Image (cartoon, rainbow, N blue to C red; front, side, top):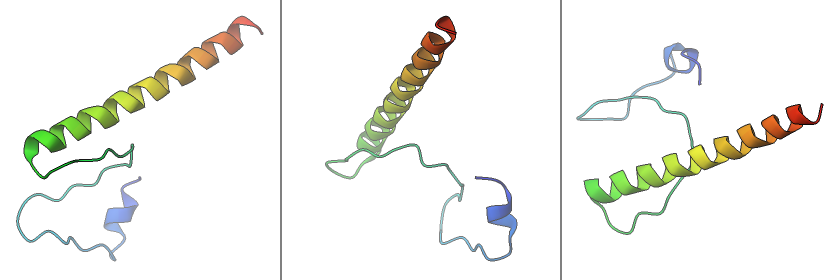
Length: 68
């Protein structure tokens, strides 16, 4: 996401109390029950999935360069 999606004049925060921030969508994970520990585990799961995906992409690109 670029910065213009926040600064276009149409965006209004929906948070009543807390901190508003924008993030890119990386993935999703199921959370069994509400809580900060569960949210932290779900976040770790998403990050692990992204790292694996990036490793596969890097490995594929590396193999392609070997056979050029």
